[in-house]
Length: 210
Image (cartoon, rainbow, N blue to C red; front, top):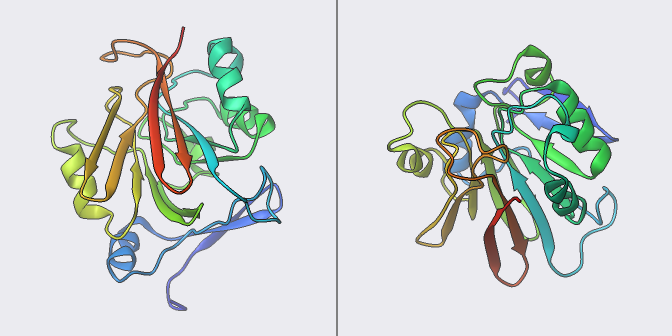
């Protein structure tokens, strides 16, 4: 592990070690989980007790949180952790989400240098006793889930975006979850985000945004 070059970004007092994307698959396959983070009561310090609620969104393609529906903002505010899976595409939106609550995210293919300077392309979180892979995804929409299955091994949940189409699918014991586009960008049929509860069981829901 010492020979792997990494960089450290500071997010509200906690540090996340970022590993080059080409290393992640090999490390995951070997059972070594990188970018792990113990989330605690909306802050870092004390461990969660009981279930952890995640609000998961992707492909917003807006500059500010104020450009998204108020019902979505209410849903995000009630979560222990907000996760954005890329294509924000405004740096100010990332700042707004951090101000709203505990936040983690990854960059998407439409995100510029300002976002990529702060968010990794991929990450793995250890949260609520489970390991979650975060990625935007890329390339052809067809076959994306299969490519992610190959890339991320040994995790419990794979969170991804890119397609703008909400999906949740269990493959064995692994949940593949795409919250769709929170802005309803084509080819999404509606605006959606996701809610995931991590407790004794993993419960996931696609939520339509009015």
